[in-house]
Length: 116
Image 1 (tube, helix red, strand yellow):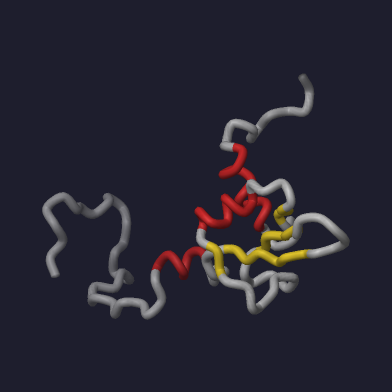
Image 2 (cartoon, one colour):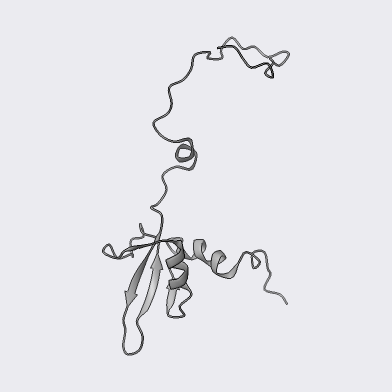
C-alpha cells in the first residue's frame, strides 16, 4: 500500500524494521485497551432504614462490594436526582462521590482553597 502524498520519510531514520503489511483489527477496542477494564455504567441506591423518619440511602458504584446486588441500576439523571435528596449520601470508597459531586456542585469548586 503506497503512503499518501502528505507522508514523507524523516531524514536519518532507518525504516527497514517497519512492518508494511496491514494488521488485523484488535478484538478489543482501542479505548478499552488504553483505559483497561472499566466498571459498569450507572449507580446503585442502597436503602437504609434506621429508626423513625424517612428512609435514607447511600449511592454506590454498581461494582462496589457494599452495593446491593438486587437494586436497579440508575442512569446519570436518576442518580443525580437521588443524590440531591438530603437523606442520600454518596459512598466515597467506590468512587461514587468522586464521580457525582462535580456534577452536583458544578466544576467551579475545583481548586478552591478553604481560605476565605
